[in-house]
Length: 247
Image (cartoon, rainbow, N blue to C red; front, side, top):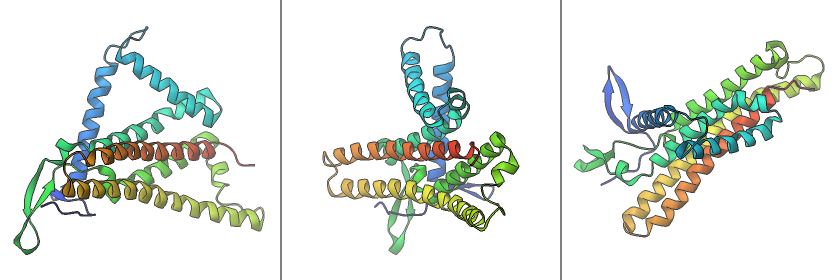
């Protein structure tokens, strides 16, 4: 039987470091994206054809969206790689997590009352709160570092620490609290949606394993895309705010 667990299941360990099924999925996603990038960028042509044409069309479309947020093409090209990496990694992780053949690969371990429990080798990385929290911290910290690099440490710190007036001091405290709140909202929003989707698919697959799960799979594909887009767009908006001097 398959057991629903909020905690990521440990598969094996390396020098005492536990390797979970969500970590394995993360490694698989990184490997897949790396191989695809090598294939697509191995021999780029000046006049794109085939897959390169589709790839460049998608890049131009996303760049236009980023440019609309920043209002500058140069700034869009500067911060696009970071935001696009977050989007692609989350999207691939979410979609890989609902692939049927990956979910069917696993091992049996002893569970409660002597029953054997099926533990999948691969599980969506976003269904692990450790992953979403780490990604949220990376997003928020990178936003602060990019803000410092764009306008300088003193001006950027002035958004959070200001003694010009009691109101500005209080607003700075609220800004610090909001940065912590971003990490919490980022991590729990992504984790909650992806984990709930996995539980839904498990329950539907157990009750009606044929035909019925298909609409729910389509729904999870859409949810996986939306969650990746929301995370990336919020990161993009926060970067655009951090890289502009406050007035």
